[in-house]
Image (cartoon, rainbow, N blue to C red; front, top):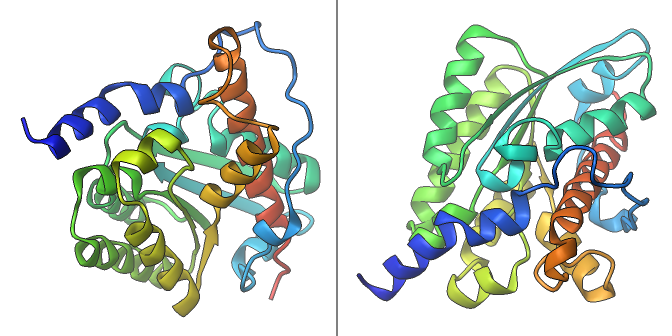
Length: 252
């Protein structure tokens, strides 16, 4: 097995997913503490108009979330997932709105896998908001960045054609992942797409790095006994930060 193949197997099989997606058993964790979310990291570069309108009094917001293992929650499902935490925060911030969530997440899912799921979902249902977490699997597998960018562009075009808003969720901050994979080209591809089109970028990498450097949330450095609870708090804080980004966008 090649060096890159070794790390692809090692990272995708269990450790990173376990650090970032595995949760504590139900009933064990205390309610997560409030999160320090710097405003500049969740300020949308442009309004997500359709989302702002849907969150107005009496509105309805259908959310489609696509991602790999780190998007998932307790036991690899929707319960305790980042989008589920986001919806809880949105309900608190926009109590009159009706909110729905559809989650398609699978460990080792690629952007191409998610694009297929996106197209299938939009052929059968209408959504106002798409959350698309991607880039990690591509970085581990060294997928050509132009191929990755082209897949994202196809997805962004499909979302725009359906009249929905797209929020890209970039790669996680992880010392292990960063030591063994070149994340920068994939982060840059997502940043470029968000800068040049009607796409918002949720800066997960920067948020997680901020929390790790300040000592607030650091799953990789957490004591083994606390790692599950720390991972749960991480998901809750990411969901809260996502909600702040969504709520910050005015209707247009």
